[in-house]
Amino acid sequence: MANEKAARRYAAAIFSLAHDAKLEARVGEELKSVSDAVEGDAALHSFFVSPVISRALKERTLLATFGSRVHEIVAHAVVLLVRKRRETLLGEIVRQYHALERAARGGEPLTVTTAHPIAAADLDALVGQLERRFNKKFDVETSVDPHAIGGIRVMMGDRLIDATVAGRLEDFARNLFAQRT
Image (cartoon, rainbow, N blue to C red; front, side, top):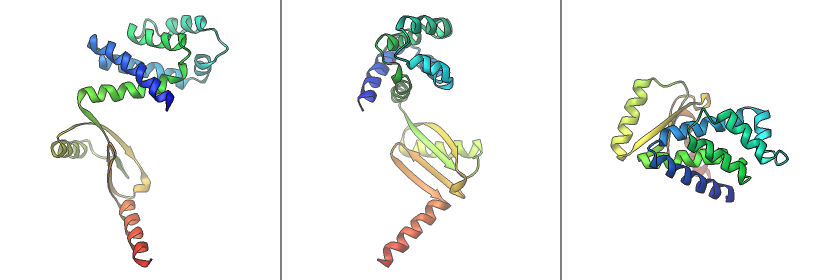
């Protein structure tokens, strides 16, 4: 919880700088790229979060690695994390930043889960219907869950619409059990 709160503060500061420069999307993408690179390489991750390695060495290495490839807002943010010994917050900062970016665009998260990959036209039609019905813009993420058997599961924020065969079978079993007791 404390880490989430600190990460939210860093993300808000980074987002504010990016917003002033009108680079919200670019900074978000580059921040995620740096985080993915650090998390994706075990040696780099160990180097980045190690309390034994000097902050000066970390700064030089990170600037040499990412400095010319990312916007200065991103480079300075990563260096600041090192200086403040907050390296472990990077992943959470990225999540918080994207939440701020989505909120600024007026977007809401939407996860569509199906048993088999959904056709792009069907997904577009579904999202269009939901956007008109709820008067919101959605950031869509799709996933495939073979255990769903068939149908579709839609998660909008904290609202779940489960029209999968597995979900209906669970509801049926729950209702059947409730009637027996």
